[in-house]
Every structure is written in C-alpha cells, then in structure tokens.
Image (cartoon, rainbow, N blue to C red; front, side, top):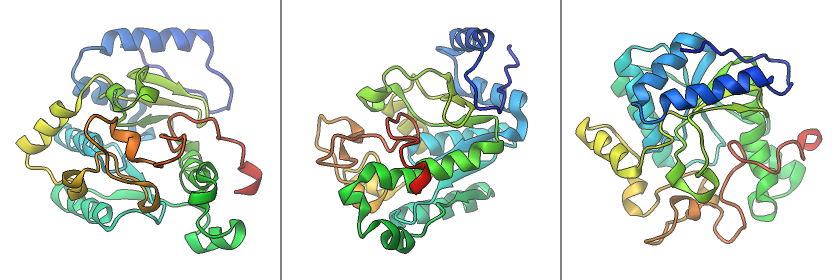
Length: 253
C-alpha cells in the first residue's frame, strides 16, 4: 500500500503523487471503510484527523475508529450557530465512547462579526459568513495536519457525485480521505441502529443535513438531503469541501 505523504508548502501535488492517488482509489473502491481508516492511521498517525458535523456519516467514522483502536483526533467546526441538539449529541458521543472531540472556532464571535460586517451576514452574504465561520477556521486548523478524514458521500448531492475516496485538498494542502464515498444512507443508518449509537433527533423531523440554525431547513420527499441548506439561495455547500469563494475574503474575514 502506498505511503503517500503531502508536502505542506502550498504547491500543487506533483504528477507522481496524483498517480499514487489514482492507485489508492483503485485499491480502495468497493472495500470496507475500516481498511481506509486503518491505512490513514498507519500512514499519517496523529497528523490524520476526523472532521465531523455530527451527521450519521461522522458518527459511523468516529465509532469505527474507536472500535479499531485508532488514535485519530476528532474535531468539529463550532460556528457558534449550531442547534442545541448538535451540542447535546457531541456530549453524548464523548461520554459513550470516552473521547474528547476538539472544538475549532472562528476568530470572530457572532457579535464581533455583526459589528464588523453587519447583522445577520448569513442572510445577506452567506458565502462570506461561511468563509468566516467555517472555511477560514478549518484551513487554520489543518495547517499543521497531513490528512483530513470526512464523511462526505457521492449520493448526498449533485456536487458530491464525483467524490473520490482519497483526494488532494489544495486549499489546506492535505490529503482528503472520504472512506464512505460509495456508501448510501440506508447502510449507515442500519449501522447506527444496530450499535445503538446516538444521533441528532432533528433527523427524525425532516432534517437529513444539519448545519447552522439560520441556514438549515427541513427537506421534502424526493429532494437531495442538502437541499435544506441555505434554502432560497443558489448554494448547497458551505465551502469547506467544494468552493468558489475560498480566498475571496481572506483580507477581510
């Protein structure tokens, strides 16, 4: 198995590394996520981190890493606008698994953001708000990391259909690992129920994808699960995974 290592220099990956990514994806496609998690841990050690928004995919990955005995740090982006149910779920997971989930916060509080950029920036310029509260904090947190493990899946939205299991994230200059890229909702939910894992009760109220309070709404039957994010906007991604806004606000965050 390839022992690919990123170079933290902000440059694009050389062709040799791109070739390794293609080979890794060939080997991992169709295999169990455990194999991908074990590879990530063995290759990057504590420099590999699991990011979660406390959705079903994240819960699965956190639990599997725990079962496998992997020392892989877990973090979440605390925008300070999350649902109370989300914070309660964090506490339940920490207690049940005996772990500590690291909080990554933006430089500006919600009040400081309002003072600098005006009230309810999320309504006037959601891309700018997402950059301040999610994109910039993530980039800062990953600056000394080598691999970022996520729970994104191809079936979540049209923007995620081409997700690879192992990718290079140019924004944060890390290897991005998506062990569940090929899995569907039913398989993940079957696992959560089988192992009696806690999950966000808002999922039972029509919220398949849960983010910040002002920008999350229920989803109608037949819609993609991310259609409830930024309802009424031409936007279904915050920018940490797929972005056309990254860098636009760096000098004014």
